[in-house]
Image (cartoon, rainbow, N blue to C red):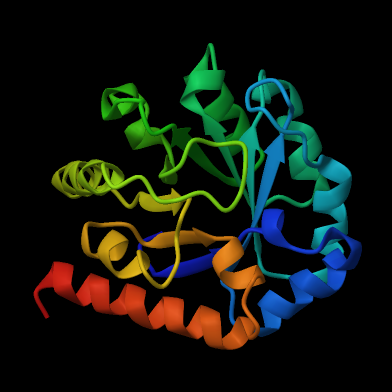
Length: 228
């Protein structure tokens, strides 16, 4: 979970051509396909459910990263795993019994992650960090694509990276929101390694070139952090 991974978000894709849009970023070098699930309750938007995940599974063998921005996510874990999810991330703000939901995900042999909104403290991870495969930090307030990166997220990423390394954990840090060629290098330099990019990829003219540029800039940021 420490490798640099570029995860285009289909939230910014053309849904009338979704199969081709997923194939396009797959062929363009994406490591992960990020799927945002919104219920109109936890966040002010409604998107997709397990049927779309199942359709995505039929057109790619890449990792399907299902981000549940929904209330009561525990009730839907099995449906998304059965549809083909490889990773499932849930918001700490949406889970009354977070440890139970994380265990539920891991019992289905998929990667389990937790997500923190911009104003949620890292202290929410105090009793769960050692049990997850990845932590996603929202760098925008969730619900809509195309938002600008919140700069205070950089310090939050840095603090989380220091904590993971001090504990000797193999926990990935995923960042979602405002990731683009303008921001990814700095985000990588402070400790992130999984990058969700929606509009930066899908609104570009060349998916392959954009994904390659994002990967190159992320690698430069990682080299800075490692002092190479």
